[in-house]
Image (cartoon, rainbow, N blue to C red; front, side):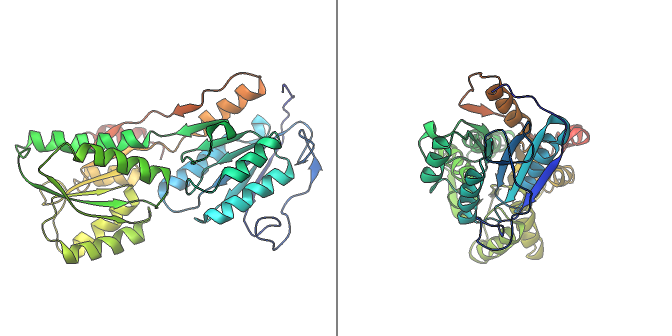
Length: 340
């Protein structure tokens, strides 16, 4: 492409009440013919549509902030930010809206994997490259440029392997272990991958038993609600695994209210995913025993891909961010360096 970048700013926060998204209200920006001949904000800017899932967790807030801070006026981008509001149908409508505007790139963070084939085909026919971020789709990979984010299946494997190591160190490897799992949003890539990784490792231990595996939808409120219900049915829980930190925070509140001890020295071993700042605080306090990192700072990789496309270079179809496993034993060594 090789088009000149100039300094300019327009970070647009588009809600899905705009024209083409919900059929109500007015478009919140001034239309000008841009680089691709569609709607843009200046002939030399790279106009990017970013479709986010919503605001369901602290992880998501950090992820959104990373994109807003990366695609800035200093780098010559016009970023159209769209909040999916945890509604996959709104996301699909937003995709069609961005295609009709003729943006230069679309970065899509899909809530669920299904239902994207037609929209992706239209984007491809319109010569608009689509980058998938954080979560995946079930569509033909040839319809999008690449996928950028975390290896969710490996995250699940790492969580279960940490549990195995912990039990062995404490002489409990031969005990019957009763496990409760709070899963994320049904159909989400993070849920599918983490669940697959967990189940794969759990099946290797004949003495590990899953008492319950319920959807907490990645939110703190539902994490507490679901855990309340589980505690009414099960009194012999040895391990609680939540597929994100926010569900764990809600579940901790439920356990505290019902006088169920957890964490270091407690009955219930607590493991979650994301490794947010609040998770580190809870690990240092001994309430959370391990959190498998899911790095939200992936906007830099997205920008790298766009720069490669602008230079006419080939792009790797799958790009993982670096991630670690943090525990109550090492959290204090890392908390000072955390950016989220």
